[in-house]
Length: 343
Image (cartoon, rainbow, N blue to C red):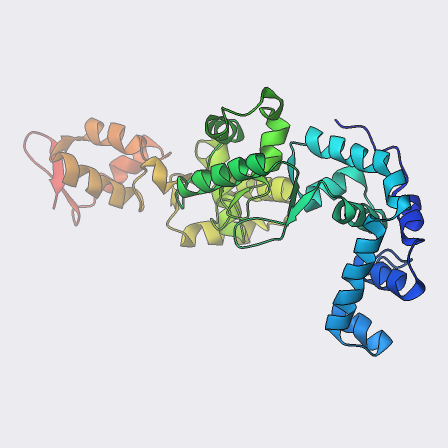
């Protein structure tokens, strides 16, 4: 992990702002949250303070930044900008603004000062948040283009229901950027690049997919239950599902509520006493009687043992439960060869 920065951001900005006249300095302090309260003010709010237009505030801001950049004080801080350059390169050369700032400082005030220094730099380039990506910083234009294009390819190749293990999505992304330097082919860097995209995301289980998918952006009990059962990989009792939702998602899941939600959703199939599986696993829906009907519809007349064997692949029930259901003459009949068919 990159070591913490050696310089004191607030001290550096204080020295740089010292070259400006009072009002220009105050405008930058207000715009970038460099004051005691760390609040960023809009152009309009600052304009109201000085009884000037928002456009005039913008002009003062641009003037102030320009004058700081051409000052002797700015030249003396070269080591500071070189250090930020090294950090950005170590993090992958292309980083979401939020990730970059969180990496260097935990408090908003210090982050504001670092962000201001990034804006002052001649080296760093910032792209604003849009429909596809978060605010991000980079140095090399070619690298930025490569990462942007690769993220778009990854997004276009994902389906609505895809849930991709983290190792798999990292390997896929590595194929897209295989011509880059080995420095960038590190798991932590790839995950950092993936996090820049607003179109793809990761759920609390560490699986990736489309950010809009309920499999990734789980919104309620049913979505949480789906992810829990899928991760479990086999039928699981609804009480265990409720407990797992509480443990993994930190959402209080009442057992009765969880059971009711599972019953209502076609993604789940009740396969035994309180045991639920996913319908996508191929389990037949319905009670035991319905499963027997579907088995006979598919395979034709079968002996009791053949029916029991097939139903037990769909339901966790006792053999006697299946035998009792077969005695219902309203739905099933037995021929002279002791085979059952639909009545």
